[in-house]
Image 1: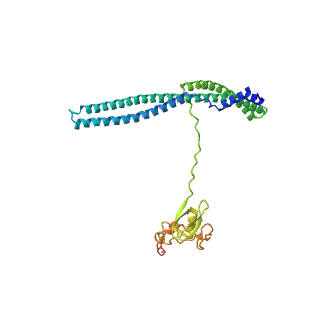
Image 2: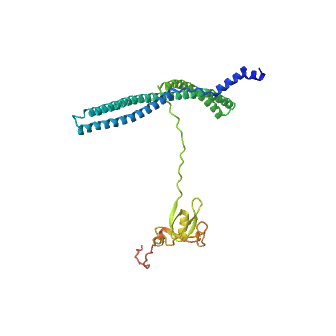
Image 3: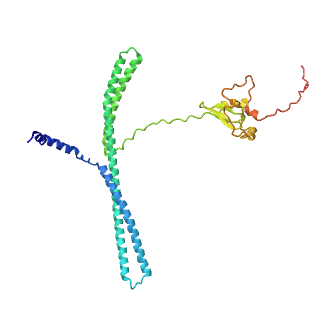
Length: 340
């Protein structure tokens, strides 16, 4: 036999072939947990209940149809000569009733099984949740036990470092405070751990409730109030900047909303009037749509300088058009004054 044939048929070749077969095999299925089994059983029962409900509805309709045919036979057929047809219809009604009742009884039983499966599934879920909560609590307690020696050692190191400053009153007070606090924390932790270790078993067995989750604090953004604005009626077209610095165009003979300071400046300059001014009712919209923000007669309310050394007029009283009342001529009155 040739050497290469012997090598191909030797033990090493067989082992490699077996390993390849094992590598290509489908891995073993994972065993389902009790909760997964209950969920699968509940899904199967619900599917069965839906099918039975559909069949029961069809059987109910067939029974009603057979019963209606029998009733028509009783009303229309010859009662003495059609006994065979009547017997056939009665047999059909009875068969439909048996089928309908069979589906109804099966549906009742399946519904009872569904209720039982739901209760078992809820109990299993509660068991899983209690187990997870107890394991988490035990893990947290282990972390506390591991962290306590580090905390005590760090406090002792800090106290030893402060003790070298014994000549300083505050440093000595801190040393005493750290030592007293460390002793109290160590004793309190011992009592707390004993109590909480018992709580681990109580939670797992359902005697104690599952500890509530730590509330998550979320910051709620506070909405900032919008900057104050004022609506005025423009007597001339003007450009202005809003609170965000964007350039806005106010059309002549139209209302415009702008920052209060800009609106007051426009009122003082006579570029605009209040919306209560009678001119607004007469002139609003008369300009039409012929506007050019870059026209030379458009006023820039942000760069124009107001005349100085002029009396300040409040636009509200000025728009009221008060008329001064006439005053009488000054008169001189002589009075007698007694002299001592």
